[in-house]
Length: 85
Image 1: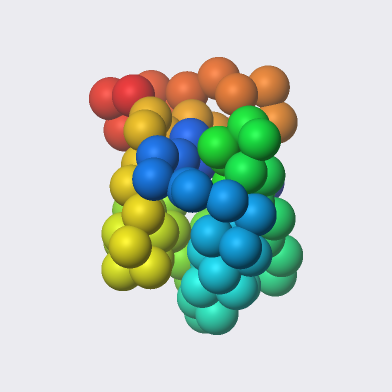
Image 2: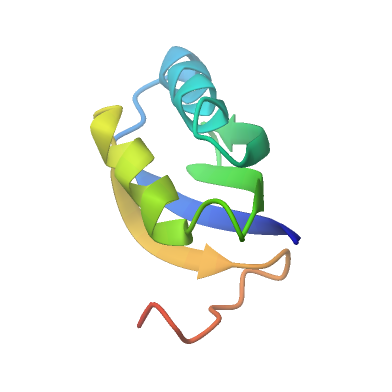
């Protein structure tokens, strides 16, 4: 089932960083779309929850050299409660 998740980011220095991170997220198996806003320090990711987990998305962010500020889920930015965020 497709989900839209949001990740609050840290470490983005400019728009180029946002583009690099968006490409890294799109490369994750199960991700159909990803956009990163430098101004908001937020990634919005559309993914298949049966293929990829939010933890895997967080690892992709970290592997690209950036950090998660606080994970949130859903379009309303409300935490699902499962991550402790």
